[in-house]
Picture: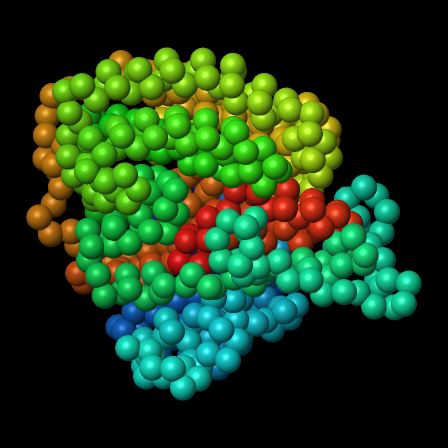
Length: 160
Length: 388
């Protein structure tokens, strides 16, 4: 299916899940309502016409400075059987960074979501083991937030 | 989860030992078989492994944070330092992502040269993977043969771009240097040498060695479903019998112009998807890389400037892209967000070894402690790219 057909299919199955579509982007993406992500993910994986069996990448990002204080949770999906791709984006308020986890749908999301939590501070609800993954467990702050200030010391050790 | 409780040979993992407790055993962070600074926390019941919890991040160098302060040409040398055993392939992945955003067409000569260096680096990387895997299994000699052959590739790279490990060779829009006059001959000489040695030395000494087969066959079996769901890619995915390679199935550069085939595990020595299969896929892939090399060297255009299309200022247009390429370890993805400035807003890397390592818990349950060494070796991880 091409992007337009995919979006049409999704809108028919879950009428209020897809908020926006961006077919003109380098990697065409849809904006997904936060509460609908879990249901949509299951549909994307299990519907034989969609069959997105691979979560290529899950990224957390602090939105560009032009877009106020928002966090992005971006999923890039691929279907081996049909050869189609789709990107989903959930936009979160940096003050309320909770997002449904998809680790139960695609197991690879487990580590990727831990990384997004570690780096930009998205808290995934329903994640089986949400711990930091690259930074030490007692690290303060989320380094890829735009307002992050690198600490001068870590446990008494100077970091310069 | 149901599948997590299944032991790979069919029986179930015990929740606890006879006295109701599992022992915790730390493998690493300093351990000869962890291929870097990695800590595996094993829960064991006697000699049997009940759970593996990898602890990563010891090599975290904030690659993604650095990218926010650098221009794309400045980022290229940083990509070298992610998967330092396959720096060319990392350069290539990043360069292609930027070029797709900018709509930049690179000259045909450059495309062919990129394929040549990428395939050479794939062989060099697989040689390390195979050599160190053998070393983990107690086979010392094949390691030296692998390094001898890899040395020929590094000599070629040194001649071409001056560096032996971290090349900064593939730039956005082109390459840093043209080949020397005799580089093509050297590559062909390497192909002739290598083709023979694979069948006369490496395979009899290692791949079909009885002890090696005993240690790796039927160990750490990964099913295709597990592989897809956990995001395994590259030889780890193909070892499970999945016929999927981005060079063919999501083509980039000029890979569609060559005759070669995707190699998959067939369970020749045991079960499809065991450690031996993951090893064997790498051996077969090196032969295919040699095939691609011969064709690319014969077909490559010789005239033109490799820096002809390199922009004086690389500026990514506003937007975002996810672009993936096949490195020796699997799918390397770059998710780049730009708002049109000199530096990208966000560069997220999807390192293949990161996902491949996350499989280790599922496929190690029920195995022996010594088997975890085999499983880790067969997954062929590079911690530089896992930790970034």
